[in-house]
Length: 596
Ligand SMILES: [Zn+2]
Image (cartoon, rainbow, N blue to C red; front, side):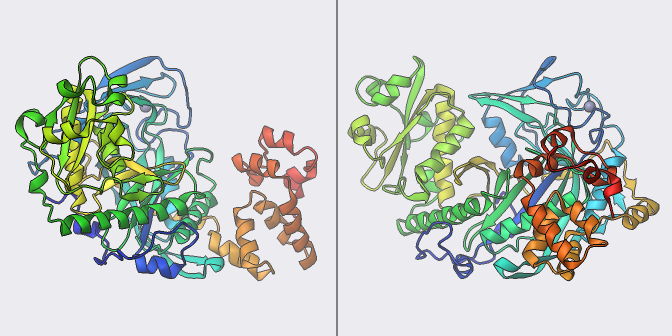
């Protein structure tokens, strides 16, 4: 049963297996074309509202302390179609205790699902409409709140309330330094509630802070039409500029987050979550492209060796070492002499399990990402799903130096391994070891598909790790707690009449008065853009030039401070930047009177 629709597959099915792996920066756009690289973005932006989206708790009031804790367990239920969702099953397998920390100043009974939703926050709806209009989307005539499955525990209900605002927009996508001059298709914009902030995740216990839960977010989704890592970054920056043009979005750490979707020829859309800034994005997606290529190489080798899914299957019932000859409990034989590293970290009732992977010999150390090999794909699945606490918890027969650690001859015999087979050895509590052994075989089965449908997590070094199985296509269903909300025409007209200038229109205006395309974009992004605008009214060409140069020279720390919240329209400066800017900003510079 495929978990995801075929549209998740890259349209090209011919992976360029002979293509040499290269570092980011060594590839030209034509090379990404050979790879069949396709990328798309989902940009989440917190909206700057007073209240949360479906209750009247204050938005943006973050707290470290808490007044109460709530404990929850996730349990999968059959969908209306009589099927279990793959993600739901995976989350259930992790047997997590989920702890929510509540602070009375920012959480009510809605967030923890003890009260139905209040009416949707109209301030958020209006900002989202404005955002959709800026992206040239066709607005929906009625808001219908939907439930999107969210099973990692970060939302206590197990779903996120989300409402489609607009669909099918096209915006200019011009990046002269990358030779881009075309349009970017925006698939949709939704208004949705934010999830909890994770405090810790150790073993079978995950702790969340609920202060952020329920805050309104807009989610803008592009079509997968970005063709290189640098194009993806440029598109992310463009979408950020559009959101900021409204002046009604939150700024700072965590206020804007993006998920990136990447695939290459023969691969499948893989979603990398929580990319915090644009800087590391190109490296991250480049690495993912080659991870997919290497998984496809592994698949090709397995096909040559005639490995099949059935060869890796374990019956569902019972402990895997009781029901399959691919798995053995080798605790007794090896506790003393065999696995020294395991013995050092083992608890008294831990089990050592050996798992045979037929035909995988030599493939577990096949490179996947810089510094990582295929065994990392396996250990990550085990870490996330079986939740072992000890480190390390696994060795394998392809590992360098593993011979000195494990008495492989005995272990190989215990699972009947032949030359050409690989063996993975795990140690952890009995139930976890059973889950882990099954997961090792499940990941090996996925290797026959090539690129499994997963969401992955961005790491700081540009690599990525397993997060969860990608949810099924039918993860959205109507919310029965909220009535449809017709969008008032007058409201739309009022918002349309007061739309801020779109970034590309502003850039054009600056180019018309003599700035280069790059300079124009720089002013649009700069916190002192308003000052430049104010000068434009009366200044001569030389004065404008001067304003631009002076703008560039404003000390970096002032600009950073002003980035926090600066609205010249209000004549207000944040205290911090006022303090920093004493030398640069005279009274007249900071007041409305200064405006020309
Ligand atoms: Zn609330």
